Length: 401
Image (tube, rainbow, N blue to C red; front, side, top):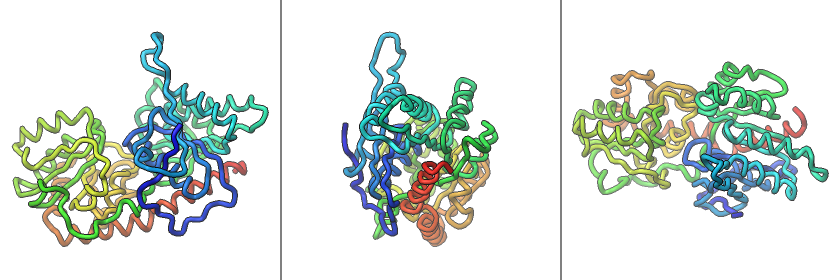
């Protein structure tokens, strides 16, 4: 058991804790992906506001690992056994939640991502009905995108996903678009489960514009810089982005920084060689120093075929960096086309390259859009404001609303 929390600047301006602190269990993936980031940041924010927060995962999420503060981390890993093809982490997490609940008595059990975490949380809540000295916690499930559009919608998991959504005391999604698709795919329309839309948020004190103009690194001294951050899965379409970048720059001095790693990275490297742009593309791998990469960049690139929200794009906006993105999923709820960035239709390589070229090589327009992007992030996605929305939702769930 470890206690971890926040080392980055806390954005507590205007924050007000609710009258009675809650005991909250958060279950999430320990990844760099959006669901793990949002769950970790929400846990830290709730802890900052006086709640007793416990986070359960099979490893320490990176956003907690770098921090210190009022969140208690419980790492629960399945025990290897010859009968198991892989250790059953989800069952170990369920057991650990129950063990801690006996002592703590959780009010809220908040699962991020439907499979497997909502299932683990559901099992823990049902088992807690047998405890004499405590009431079972209320179950909240937050959907982040691929848990509905890909994993949860697969026939292998669809029936179980629908069951845990209907059995939840509350379901939330990170965008209106995801709520719409959830209702369409699973017929989740009303009682016993309704859907609240609570968007992702950003720590405006941590993701902030640089105080002065500075290059990202010695290897980016000449020409503008575009940045992309992802797990290089097929849905992110990073090879397509590399081709669009090559068309946008036409051998003019510019650099594309690709941050992250995953199955599509080798194909991206092959394409840079095929197009002869090796000197313009840098592969950085997985990095934690995102504000230091996003802030000095001229433009952030998102090329996804499917995106429920676009957290990395929001973090770039908070750093004062405009975004070029495909118009998919919940992205239009984050980026206002022509104001905080550009949205182009999926698959339209020429339009994407034109938008990217405009921001890379029109410095005044790029700076104007970057300032608008920061204003939008401050106005609509402040960490303390969104955390208060989660608090209000918890209160309504505990009141049976």
